[in-house]
Image (cartoon, rainbow, N blue to C red; front, side):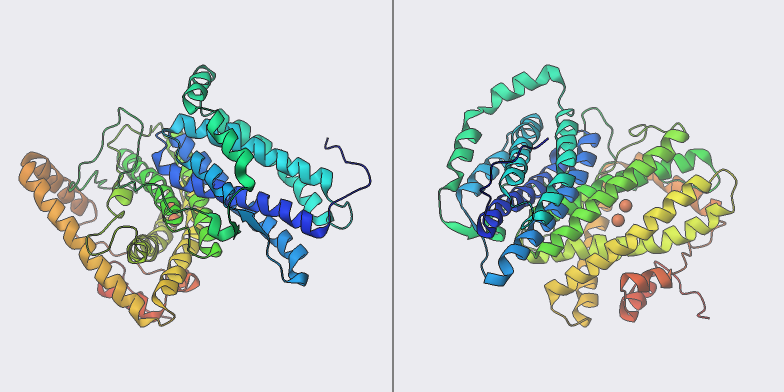
Amino acid sequence: MIGRRGSSTWSPAQAASSLAGLAFLERALAHILAGWAVKMPAFEAKLLFATQMHRAMERATQWRSRIHGLCHAVAVEPRLPKGWQAALKHIDASPDPEILVMAVHGMLYPRLIEMCEAHARGADADGDRASLELIASVLPALRAERRCGLSLVPWSKRARAKARMGGGTFDGLWTARQNGEPLPLEQLLWEPLDRVPAAVRPKGLRFSPSGSLGLLPADPLHNASDLAILLHKELDEEFTTLEFMARNSYEHPSMPWNFHRDIARQAFDEGRHARMIGRLMQARGVRHGQFEISTASYDGLYEFEPCQTGSRKELLWRMLIRQTFMEGLAIDHLAFDIQRRKKLAGQSDIAQVFEYILRDEVFHAQSGLRWSRELLGSDRAPLVEARREAFDYFTSRAEAARERFVMENPDAAMAELAAIEAVKAARGSKRPETPLNRIGRKQAGYGDDDIDQIVAWGFASEKPRD
Ligand SMILES: [Fe+2]
Ligand SMILES: [Fe+2]
């Protein structure tokens, strides 16, 4: 229960200033989690970070909307002193995952909860009722998120992690947060503290080497062990996309607010997909890690020689390849696979999971198209050209890695060739023909020029138009 103070309550300006602190804390929380998801070795931690990142971003949006409600009439925007940034940046600079969790869930969440409680005590019950209602709905979620986060670090390790944190530093910075130049909320975020070119995984797993074709399931539609490989690969894709998207947000804090909302939503979606694929695997006795793990969809898309590291062009190429090319293909493949699996016995659970995933992919591709266009300007033509340029570089680099792999691992390369032959034999030596999912692609916002490009490249075939 939150106790209320006597009769004196906050003015609209005082309430807006309190909400500014809440909005910034939530936005900074999303920023920190976005940067760290890929650096957390445990898969469970990655899923939790994606969920909490999305929730924090949505709450930050709600706090911002309340601030707007209180400030729009007088054309004032609340600012916060730069000291707030120093305190939050200190958490982001944590030296390892355990300390980060103890800092986020052991120190930041309690501050967030205290600030909500303070607002509930200070706000005018009628004048600022919308904020009070929001706080009442948010508080239980914040408390639960704090507990879930802390559960990532076992009790036995918490005291040691705390001792390594030098707890006084954050407390000191928190106390001093009202110092420094006042800045608008969006300018208080900080530039990325690091680059992470390779996704972190738990120790002891086996990985597909660079240039390898990875595991090649010959007949994942009818053969149980090939289906196991397909689901295993799919799970890796979900994790790497979650991490990749989160880094795109973290590494570009000055992109518009709605860009970060879209990305947080996608990271959360990819986490839900991972859970659903995990369920399908569990039902079939497949364990993540029983085959080689691949992080290629993160490591192989993180940077490109023609793009300056950390640049907007690098971000554009990442989005063009992952979101507008690969997730576009997923829109075609999933629709085709769902149709085929629905006709097979014992696969309705897979078809249903893929149906949910397909629905999300349309939004992911849509967001990729929207923000790529934003980076390029409103004209459509450069998008197709930029995609071609990025794709040409991406494929030539993959071919070079393949050549190196074949030279250095002739036996493994021969085994892969045999696997490719098995794939061809399974489909009767015909070229794979994925029909274009025109409705899905149109719903995602692909234009005829985008569709012509993908058909010309041979990744999907046009069915006769009816
Ligand atoms: Fe996904
Ligand atoms: Fe996706």
